[in-house]
Length: 128
Image 1 (spheres, rainbow, N blue to C red):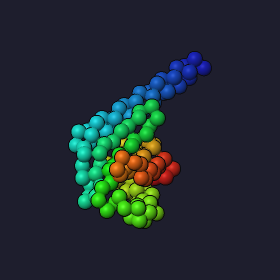
Image 2 (cartoon, rainbow, N blue to C red):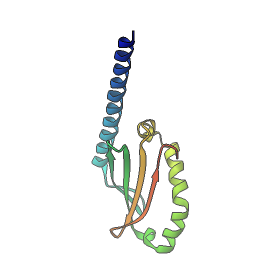
Image 3 (cartoon, rainbow, N blue to C red):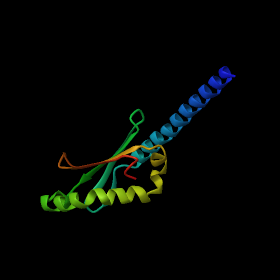
C-alpha cells in the first residue's frame, strides 16, 4: 500500500511540475508577442520599450522610457509618490496579466529617461 501511495504522490508532483512549466512557457510566449509590438507609445511622454520574463525566477518585467515633461525632476518627484499605488491598481484590474498573476509571478516596472533608471517598482503575489 505504501508503495502505491509513493507512486501516486510522485505522479502528482511530476504533473504539477509539468503544468507549471506549461504555464510559464505561455507567459514567456506572451512576453515575446508583446515585444513584437514594441515599442508602443502609451501616452504623450511614455513608451513601453519591451517586456521580459525570467521563467526560472518567475519575474515578468516591463521596460518603459520617459520623455518630454516626465523628464523634469519636479514631475518625477510627484509621480514617484503616486506611482506604486497606481501600478498596483493597474495590476489588480488588468485581465491580460491573469496568467502571470495565477502563476504568482513577480511583476517589475522599470522606467528610464535619458538612459538612466528613474523609477523601479516590484510587486509580488502578496501585493496583488
